[in-house]
Length: 443
Image 1 (tube, helix red, strand yellow):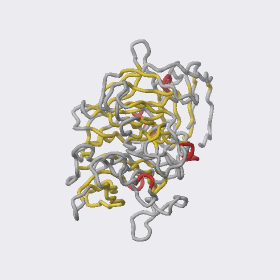
Image 2: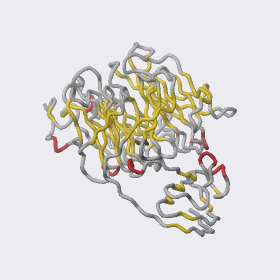
Image 3: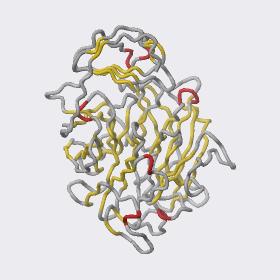
């Protein structure tokens, strides 16, 4: 960051909070049809993009006002676990206009299920609509069953695209594909989407351990997962068979080539161990729970809260089960995976994703709504957070979220976050007082 003129007067009082946050869900978007995921473009517009299972992606502004339909795809499979499952924007979306979708489709040759990743480019004339003629297919994976499609794509800190795929479907992974390094099913895949190679629209990143698209293996149905945007660590919700639901955690420097153990092990217990190694040879989940317990039967992998509006949630990992309304949370300030629980009154949650400013949004299929993950504000008001996410002068309102330049002095209890658009700078050419009880955070 360029700090040519810096005359800040501030006093930071770091507060480490370990008590369970009193979380709640606040409805922010309604009237949706089976929302599967939200995403942000990382382009300083703070727009919210909502993926609907039937094939539509809707665009909302930073205040959750509907703007337009980004894309509507047809000819996809939408029964059961199928549909339009995920959306990810290229890290350089503001420059190249690329975004990627993951969905299920019919194989035109034999009518079987396919897992598909396509790229589209934003329209030159309307930044809220895709150029539908720009479609470019990156992956087309034969999948023998209609279930266990995996379902989420994310870009890593390395700039590569990561894709979670389910196993062969049915019960017990009858083809044992999750342990087969020649099959792309039951895996975490990694692609370099910026370089075409060998007749494909992508290339294999150097280091992929099996000389193919596979990055990690041994997953059953990793329907929802996320990277921690600070550390790059991965948190994967892997839906179980009949015994255990599991949350797999892997530090970023151990992810390459990781084997999470399915179908040899389900959670921390044996499943089909013929020809398998000892469980110590695999990545055992730090947390699993019994299927049919009070926690449910279909884990939805969550997210580590890295926002600023609710300090009590900072560094907590939140996840849930699709069939229950019990929000599970783990304090990542410690190495202890003992969960805390809060009933949030909303079930059929299908995803946890971030806004550009780090606040967390969740989707509920059955409610047709998007909610913001908040805390109970009966006794605690949310703080105001002024976010610099542009490039250039402090005094340019366009560089601040919602065009709000922080007042001087900053009111006690509020924060300023300096997070310039990637590669950008913040020229702090002001006299800004940060009082006790407030913070200025530089990312």
